[in-house]
Each structure stands twice: as C-alpha cells, then as structure tokens.
Image (cartoon, rainbow, N blue to C red; front, side):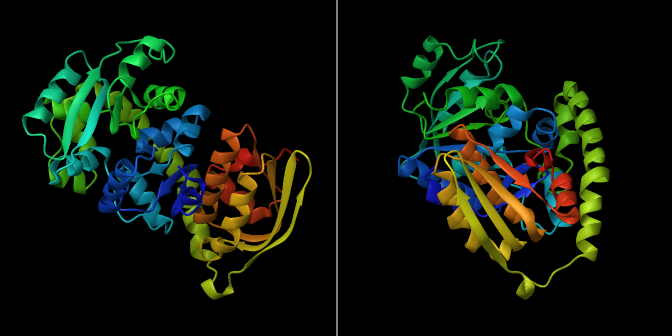
Length: 369
C-alpha cells in the first residue's frame, strides 16, 4: 500500500493488533477500488482466534500488523472496542464481505482463486460460484495438502498460482499457517488482494453452512460452527479461556482507568519537542497528549521517519496520555520500519502510560531500562 494512504488510515490498536474503523460497505468499496486501480492489498480479518494466537506468536502478530486493511471479524473484539470507546462501527466478517462482493451486480466480476482447503473444496467452490458468477468469478484453485509453509511455497506451486489472472486470492490453511504463507509469498504473487479467509471456501463448497443471521448478530456464531464442525470445540474452548484472561488482565483494568481518567478533548494537545537523527536512529521527543484529537500533528512526522531508514525511538518522558488511536499509528510506523529491517522503541513512559502499554499489549516495544 502507498505510504501516504497507509498513514491516513483510521486505525486503532486493540490488544496489540491494528483495526481499521470501517464498516462493511467501506471495506467492500476499498477492495473494489484496489482491484480497479490495479493496486495491491493484504487484507487481515482478525477474530478472537487471531487475537489469542497473536499473544504468543510474534510472527503471526506481525503478519496482521503488516496488513494493508485489518477488519474486526469477531464479536468479542467488537465488545472490547465498545468498552474501551474505540469507534469500530460494526463487525465485518470475512465471509460476510465475500458474500457482499458475490451478490453485487456488476459487469466486471472479481476474479477469485482459492488456495487451500480440503481436497475437493476448492473445486466445488469454483463450480458453485461459476453456476451464477454475479460479482465473483472463480478462475482456479489449488490444494497443497498438508505440509510446512516452505513445502507450500515451492517455485512450482507459486508458478502455478501466478499463471492465473487473480483479483482476489483466498487462502485457507488455518489462521497462523495461512498468514505465514501470505507473508512468505506476497511479493512473488500477482493477485491484487490476498487474504486468509479459512471458512469461506467451505461455505462456497457447500460443506458448511453459515450461521443464521440472529446467531451472527448476537455473537453466537461459534455455537453454530461447533454444531457444523464438532472438532472446533477445542479451539473455541481455548480461545474462550484466553479471552477471559485478556478481559481480566487487560480490558477491565483499562476500562476502569478510562472511567476515572477522562481528559476533555479541548485540553488535549501534543508537541514534537525535538527530533534528533543520527546515522542509524531518530529520537523523537513528544510532549502532551498523544491521542486521536492530536494525531494530525504526529502523522507527518511519523511518515517521514518511516522513510528515513533509521531506527525510531519515541521518548515519552513528557507525554501525559496515549490512546488506542495513537497506538494504531505506532503500529503503522512499526510496519514500515520492520519492512526495512528497522525497529520502533518506546522510552521513559510515566506510570499511566506504562500501564496503558501493558494493557494494550504494546509493552514489547519498551526499551529495557
């Protein structure tokens, strides 16, 4: 994604992951415009399983940070956003997005390719889509079977996928392996949009049915999924335990802190006190409130730092407040620095800022002092 567009995203941090505050219509329009303009986009659709996996798997978490669009695909995450006053407009399930694109009326259907799934799932999904192409037309599929990411990324496999003219590449390998496969091969593939959407291939193949609307609306889709695929109970059990831990250790403490530490918007100001660059690092000293209302002051400085091929250190010694919008911007900066082999580090936070970094699972960026 173009760096200007990336740094203009309305992105928020929730428990260490970035989320774009957009709804289903906006997401679909972004996908359609990306394809029409022949741009590229890595779409991430984090749900609770992603959120839990990201707590212990750093490369998996980084793969979500590296995405160009990250939408909330999980009712528990919507709940957390509401508690923390993060303006996520709605849950945008990956399967709902693909259904939306499939049913739209257009003279230029999106060319979709399925990578992964069970032996016959890709073939059946393609056949079912092409019975009534509508907004999607299936151009191909490939089932790599079971194996490592490296075994699924051989030149023969990549060349096979590349021979197709693909607008949307849907990967179905399991969340962590699927994200890793996209990270490994995204620069070799010519698809405009790539996303791991595990269940979508099964929905189109007809082997699994989507939950009724009421179950989707009230956060009970997991019960339907277990009914359809009983082996999923173990995943939901462990994800549920993880969610309870996150609520108790991070979300509820942060929510309580927010209730008793409100700052009026007109009292929020930020200043870049100094920005000192050496050969290999840029030290940015901030002062005041680093939050949604003061982000315009920071965006340009962060974008500039992302292009200078230096490590970036943010000095919080004079910072009184940070919020999820500021941390979302930090994740964008981290994305670009990591891509160039550089790093982002936080230093000198006060007690409150340190607590927020801990609750938001961003304390891994704190320097060892």
